[in-house]
Image (cartoon, rainbow, N blue to C red; front, side):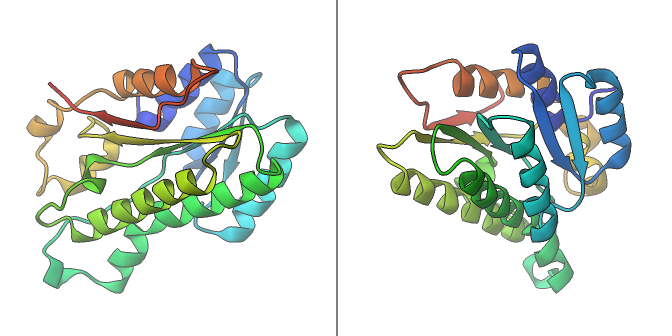
Length: 220
């Protein structure tokens, strides 16, 4: 199967660890590919993660399949342009990941009765600094970071653990529609999704008596 991004690598590596993976995504073609390859250990739900009804119904179905041990929020859309050129459509697009993160986390916490859960929120190094022509992207990522830090404060001392992940540039399809912003040559020097996924899985799922709270992943 063609490598298409961090989400695919996370699915593969979680399954390699013996986990049954449920995936909420909008791309039915990629979902079919995953289902065909991992059908015994995978179930996909196709829809818009910023749609509350879709998330609620999906989490209800997932809860029927078994215990939810991990929630990995890894969704984003972006618009890179001068701030004066931003539109309402651009804003809505950029906030999709933040809305989805909140909706998915809320419903999984309800399903789990707020116990024994590891939440891994994958954001971006753009959540740590402001970048030129990335006002909307940074705004969304800073919002995700604020949400993540507030979750940590709310669930401190409980069995709900939260990890924030801040990766730099990855060589994925994310940049294909932004070639005027990041060239193909530059994106080819970015980190691979496979390597980034391994760092996330190794740090987020291997320990029982401690919690890795934050990871910043940078390319050499």
